[in-house]
Image (cartoon, rainbow, N blue to C red):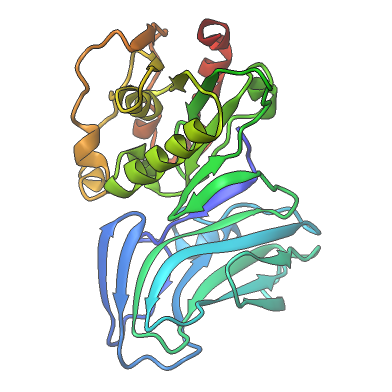
Length: 329
């Protein structure tokens, strides 16, 4: 998986929030409603601090460690009312907590350079004349990362067809198993072993299980367009973990000549109260009945990464995909 694509959420117990006159509803980890009709422009709504502040803040840093001298792209996923730009402030500090410089991000996708002497940094959402905001996440990625996409909307990303062949009649669709704190992609060394493949990933929490109402609509519309544009007889859906396999099971039943290659731990994740309000969760709980569309790969037992607390940021299932990719072929 790529390791330079970081997702930052507004957690209620991490960072600092402007509370005076504010009404804040934490619906889920990636959906926070903020309202303040009295807040002046330019004030900090919420601030995240990097690991350099750890002894003072007494909390695990939600911000990734960035490389000095490297350029990064910062994008945000949020809706504001009335519609106006959402400004984001980044401050950079040296090891003596002296500010080196600051950068104001004025549009989603703007690039900034991480200063050489930076020891710690902080990111703040700034008020800019709006009274209401529905905040989902921030995303930081290296500037040179530029995956060609068929669709990028509402946190969902669908890659262009990779390693396309002129005579292909089978489209392979890989649902990327979500990793907490990052928007993951299957690495190229694995993708290169398959022809005519697209990847589906998301920066929303748990990827909305790929089964929220909106995600189901967007995915099926994209697949329908591909089937119309190309001579596709079979769509092979691929999952390699609890969430991706459950998604593959569902979508295999939604298209003609669909088949799902999945692992036998489909749908098996530790349920928590935090999941209850994440879009797609209720649909995720509904297991599809057994079908001849499902080809199950039996995997050795593996600890569920959603139970691994802080280590969950570092854990993924890509090694499993590597082991059974010949089975998929």
